[in-house]
Length: 182
Image 1 (cartoon, one colour):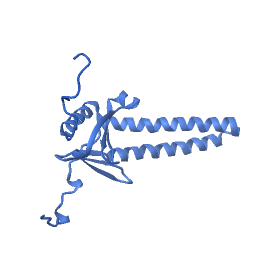
Image 2 (cartoon, one colour):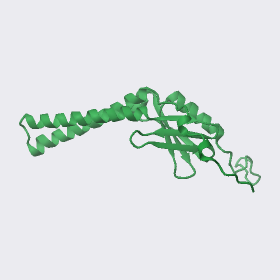
Image 3 (cartoon, rainbow, N blue to C red):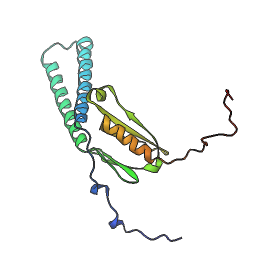
Image 4 (cartoon, rainbow, N blue to C red):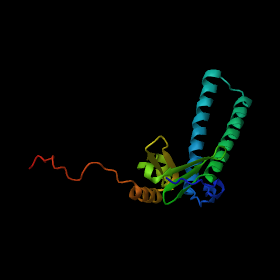
């Protein structure tokens, strides 16, 4: 068996890939999700303050609202940074998925390890025409490509399905099986 050594400096890196960004509507979905979270959080905190703590002087809720506004602004800023750092690339033998700004995560999923795929669409994604594609692998390294247009998600699912390994062990016709009508 011949097993030559590989020079690490000659290998291609994922940074040389032209990553496809998420659909622009996905940023609106991300911003809306975070805004809904803040509205629900603020409603709960204000209910707690007025019903349990009986804070009625003006300055206390004003301080709370200012704090919530700063927190909300930070969440929206982080959502924009996260959106800018998402992407995926299709290669002949694998799919590369990049996400994360502060903690960058790069997943390289070999096509021959993908068992099946699911197009996922939540209510907000459906409203904006966005879907995600979940890739299920033989191991524990499932991956999701978020922020795809519905058309792109379906096309990508079909593209991957055509490249899945054909490993069916069940023959198309079974000589030992007879239908009830025979």
